[in-house]
Amino acid sequence: MRKEKNMIDDSFYIKAYVKYRKEIKNINFLVKPISYKRFTLTTQIGGEWVVYCEMLENFSRQLVDDINQLRRYIIKLEAWSKVLFHYENEEEKLYLSLEFIEPLAIIALNLPYAIKNRFIFSLSHICHQANRIKFPNWKDNLPEDRSINFKTMDEKCKVWGNYNN
Image 1: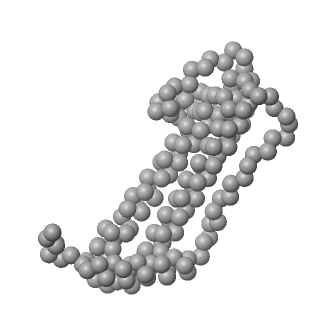
Image 2: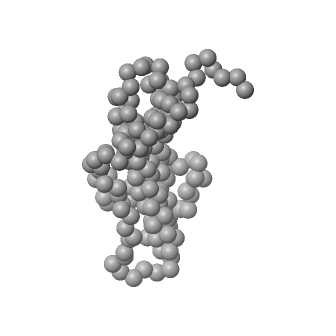
Image 3: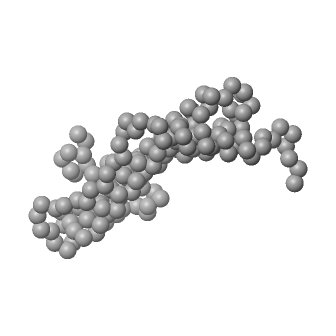
């Protein structure tokens, strides 16, 4: 296998990663992770609410996990920015950025969009389940998962008084 002309040695990356690990240990976590708390219902519910409760638990846990993951990516990017500060050579900064920073940055930039879509998906399903139970004439017409969007969420959630607040 032929090496690129300006390929940097592995020891360069290893030393940079060691610096990163030192920096990440010193970062002051201003935003604490969100803790996951199980929902406790204040009243007894019938068996028809089982699907709703399971969805509420699962969707809540997924949203909390995604938000905490975004927080972790931001912390990692902050640590890498502190590492880069110590490098003056632009080529070295570029190699470090391509190797370590770019993959984290791409995910961190796309994760808010994914969280928004998960929120829309979750609310659509949860409100649809609640509507099926609360309103006997409710039409069971939830679109396929891949077709759920903001319009779907509005349609399924608008009957709940606090939805637009």
